[in-house]
Image (cartoon, helix red, strand yellow):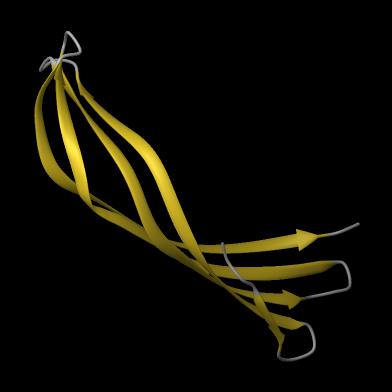
Length: 112
């Protein structure tokens, strides 16, 4: 769920701010084949994503864009379940899951 704010500063230059809230559900499996076990985490977490974009119109048919984004979410109350090679659960430990990502992008587009 998010919003989009757009402002035109100068002729041909547009700035966009896109904040959004994230809710993630995932099952993470880490297999250790040589050791004979694997782990499973069932993550459900809240987080956020923020995107800043600058767009400059070069001509009527082309523009250039610079984009910066940051994404983060975490779940501090996840159990990590350990299973042996026979798929039998033999251990459950408390753990946490954290995800952070930052990206920078630049693009050029032409419409015809």
